[in-house]
Length: 436
Image (cartoon, rainbow, N blue to C red):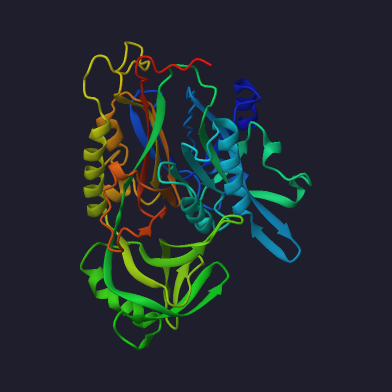
C-alpha cells in the first residue's frame, strides 16, 4: 500500500524499488544527521505479517540524474512442472538492450541489484560481473525483500505474461541518455568496499561434494596432503586458532570457483570468482550454506573480524578523499546545487550497502560504516540499508583489497562488508555542446 501511494505521487513513468531489510542508514528527520538504525526483518524470511513485529523505519530516496535514464529490470524465475530456472541470460540481455535503447551503447553506467532472499543469486551476480566491463558499477543487496515497478514492464516480461514467473531479483539500471541536453556534464559511479573478514587456518581442496536441501556437504584435503578429512577433521584445523582471537565470530569458507561463462551465442570464457559460504558445522561432512561448490575447488576459512573491518573503513575513507574537491567555494552554491569547476568531479550523492552483522554491536561504536562517506562529503545526501549479503565490485581507484587469491580472482558477492556507491558530476568543458 505504501508503494502504491508513493507511486501515485511520483507518476506512472517513475521506476520504483521498495526494499525491506535488516536496518537503514540515512539522515534522521528529527536531528538532521546521518544515522545507522539496526533492526527490522530477519533477512530472507520476511512476510507481510512481520511488519507488525519489526522495528519500523523508512529511508526514502527520490533522485533525478540529468543525462541518465533509469529503469528496473527483473531477473525472472521460471517455474514449470519439472524445471525451476533463473533466466540469467535474459536478465543480462535485457540490461544491455535497455542501455543500447537509451544511450546507443551496451554498457550501462551502473547497476544496483536487489535479491529476494529465497533464490540463490550469487551465480547471477557473478555472471553479470563477467558480462559487464569494469567501468559499469555493480552494487546491491543479495538477500532482502522487495517490490518494484518498471517504467515499461512490457519490455522485460515475455508475451505469455507473469503467471509463470516471479522476480527473484531486480536491477536498477542507469544508462546514459543519448538525448541529454547539450553542454551537460557527465555523471560517474564509483564503488568502494570495506571488508570485515580475516583468513584463518590452512587452505583445503574439496574432495566429495553433495547438495542437501539449501546447503552443501563436503569432505576435503588439506593443501599439500592426500588424506581426506571429514567435517570434524577440517574444523579441527581452525578451532584452536579461533579460540585465541575473537569471541563467537561467524565463520565462512571462501571458495575459489573457476567456471566457464557465456551469454547467448558468444564464445565461452573461463573466469574465477571467490564465493563465500557460511559454515554450519560438521562431523561426517563439513556443512556450509548454499550451493555451487564442485569437487576440486580450493577454499580458505574466514572469520568476522571487527579490527580488520575498522582498519578497512579507515583505508576506504582515505581513498574517498581523492574524490573530495576540498573546500573550494565553486563546488556548490548556497542551496547545494551542482556548480562544479570544469574538469573537476563533485560527489553529489551516495548509497551504502552494509552487512547486517556489522553496525554498533560489531564495532562497539555508533555509525562506523557511514563515517567514511560522512567525513569526506558532509551534507551530501546518502542512504543505505543493512543487507544479508552485499554485492559490489570496486572501482580500481578506490580498491583497498589485498587478495590472497591474486588479481585474477574476482569478488562480487561479499559477507561482513560495506559497499559504498558514490555518484559524481563533472562539468563539460566550454564548447563541448554539440549542435545537430
